[in-house]
Length: 120
Image (cartoon, rainbow, N blue to C red; front, side):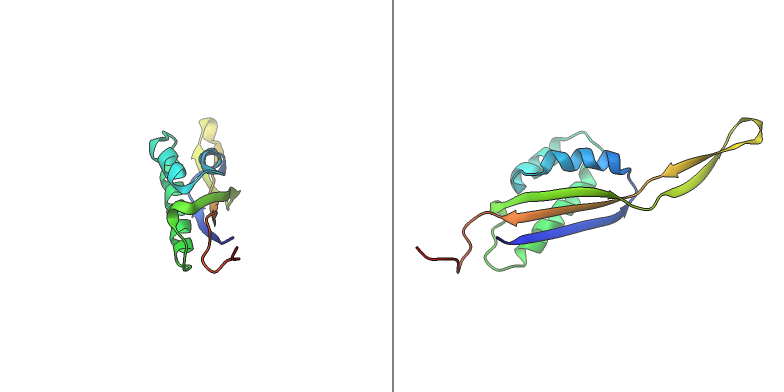
C-alpha cells in the first residue's frame, strides 16, 4: 500500500477548530472528503482542503497511483507555538490574549490494485 503525507505548519487557527474539520474527512475517500469540505460551513475547511490536495498531489508523484483510489488514512492537528498579545483592561491592567497556531497533517493511502503487485 502506498502512502503520501502533507503538512501545513504554523497555521493561524486554533487546533480545536481545525480538529473538527479533520474529523469530518478521516477514513473517507478523497472524492467524498472533498465534497464534505466543499459544503461544510466550518472556517477551517479551506486550509484543510489545501492540505488534502497537497497530499493527493504528493501521492500522484508515484507511478501507478490513481487519485480516485485514494483514501484519507489519517489526519491530525497538533498545537503549534502560541503568540502572546496583550489587551488593555480597566484600571490600567492588561490581559494576555493567546493566539494559537496549528500544525495540520493529512495522510492518504492507495486502496486499489497496484501495478507490479502479486499476480494470481
